[in-house]
Amino acid sequence: MMINTKDKINNILKEIKKTSQGEEIVVAFSGGLDSTVVSALAIQVLGREKVEAITVSFGEYSYSKGLKNIQSISKALDLKSKLVQGKTEQEQVLKKGPACNKCTRVAKLGKVKKEASGRLVLTGSNQSDTWGKRGLKLYNGFYAPLLELNKEEIRKIADYFDIKILQIGENKFREGCKLKHLLKPLAVPHYHGQAAAEANELLLSILEQEGYDSVLANVKIVGLLSKNIGLVNVFPLPGEKLKEKIIEELAKVKTLEKIDFLDKPIKLIIKANKGQFDNQHSRYWLEKGRLQPDFSVPIEVEWLLTTNK
Image 1 (cartoon, rainbow, N blue to C red):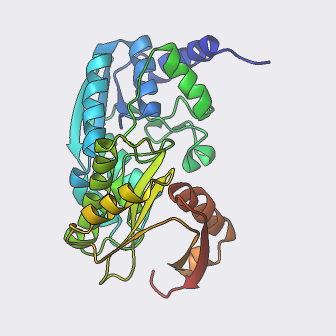
Image 2 (cartoon, rainbow, N blue to C red):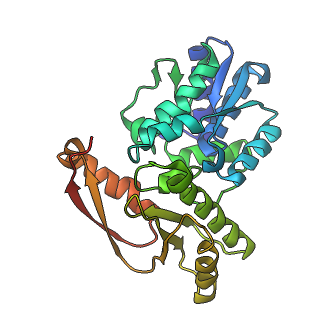
């Protein structure tokens, strides 16, 4: 039997009230669709005085437009909000290479839980999240009220509450972290991290200035540790004039040695430790679930075994 949006909302509201026992709660708030819907639902059933939204800022690794969106949504919902810093923790987690799930657990949710001081932490985890599919709805002080819902269902709830989410422009499905575009270790933050931070902020700024409506825009940072190569992804692919302007502006980023604007399929060489190299499921998920959705062209992956841990 199909359940309409209003009934889904009522069921979630009842569950939030029961799970929280009517006590004060915290929302791990990113300003995106999922955490905004969770905030609105929590306010609806518990009241504004019992809901605090805590956002972890990663300094220059967070998009400036994303932080503005957080302020705007907090004001629109009359939401108590708090900003805490997580840059140091994020740099430590990514020092040896990309680790998005660990970064979420440690640098984001770990910081929020610490600030919550014993209060239940609500997250926006749902069926679209890899860890959400395997996770528990209530575990270790975290509660995911949207866990059984997909993005379409969550958008319908947002529409019901007339919630408007402004897109950053990075990716219409998931956006907000510049360092997910650093496809190598964050060994030297002021070099590797700076390249990802500056190049991605600049790209979105150019597209916005030009009024170019893209559904995907990022600069992937690849190459050896001693050389930063920027792979520019924009979809739909812009015309030559705009492409030239983007390349010209990105050439001013001092931490980028080379810039390639992707307009045809590309082959990526990935070095993985034995654990991941031998795990076919993990390799498939990384290629098809994590990498391909962020590239504007088809990718082919060649896997190499590394002795690094």
